[in-house]
Length: 370
Image: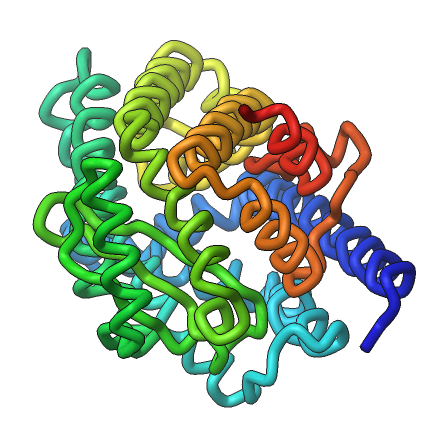
């Protein structure tokens, strides 16, 4: 078994590579979008598709498919290293390349369907409401994201994981009792076969309304005590009790409205830069993606700050509800070791990449909870 110093060294090495690759991915994607626009390839593609058919029912899906495929191919080496080679290098997965490829295919198909729905709605609303499209598009995108959250556990997760009801009846009853104590309604407690894809541990409280349920990774259920699992789920339930989910929907809604209003007010100027005729032209779609990428990058530190504040509140409430500070500390240390977490990252890394407080901060917070 690796010594503490060796574990910390491996975690720091893993984190350093992971964050470097993530930064490269961001700037590489931005560069591809800019090149795609200034090269004139976007306009050429739109013109060629228009020559085949003038119908938006053909042009939008065809354009989006070709662009998505091109970006995936260009990004494939980085994607392969990030999600497969690196994870194997640090012994964080036993997944076979064939299973990884199948997951990639399913992810791309799902992403294409979702983006096609959103983009099609964007163009339809843009034409129908030229003055207020930004408001209508924002409302549609927000509603769509809430709908996805509702169907996530019943339609999407089963495409990637198999899950069943937890067969440890004592654990199941304990989790249900905790949910009742914290006034959280859940359908049931399920175990998912996380180990087929990753050796990292996780737990989640997913779904909305009647689809709300607890998901425990088998990598967590098999290696953690009931006390540790309880404190981890108490943290997840605390998010619900503190209305963090509603607050995040409101925050994301404000961000969505702000982004589309920004596009509405400044797109004329941006279109001139890339010599594009109109935002309603499919050739300008990469410009919209460029807005999303840049705006997301700019607000990421603020978004992470809000998320970390919510996570700290959930940590505090979970300890207060269970009264088990010891289990919290042991669970955090186990998760840090198993997931090769960076316990104390550089402030800039924390600013841009951490939506949870680093482990060392969470442990310090636990010491202060009465």
